[in-house]
Image 1 (cartoon, rainbow, N blue to C red):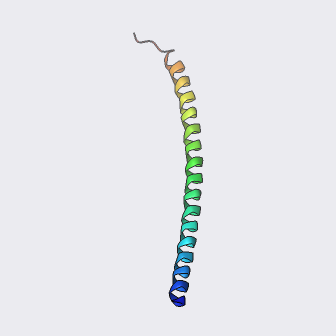
Image 2 (spheres, one colour; image 1 turned 90 degrees about the vertical axis):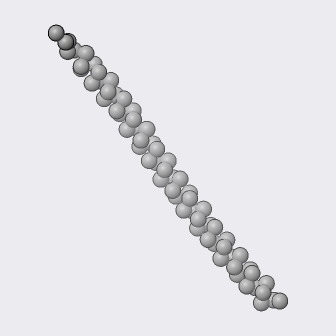
Image 3 (cartoon, rainbow, N blue to C red; image 1 turned 180 degrees about the vertical axis):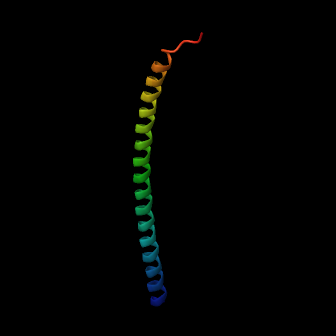
Length: 64
């Protein structure tokens, strides 16, 4: 019986370690996603500024 309990404790320990590793991986991926989202937001703002400038430039032209 003691051997069965020891084996179960060992298995639970392994599973706990695997869960901890998975949580760390999820945390790392979430951080990377956050950084990527920030970059996308900045790029979107840059594109908006460029589009506004382009609109101003094209308004100088008239169709005859």
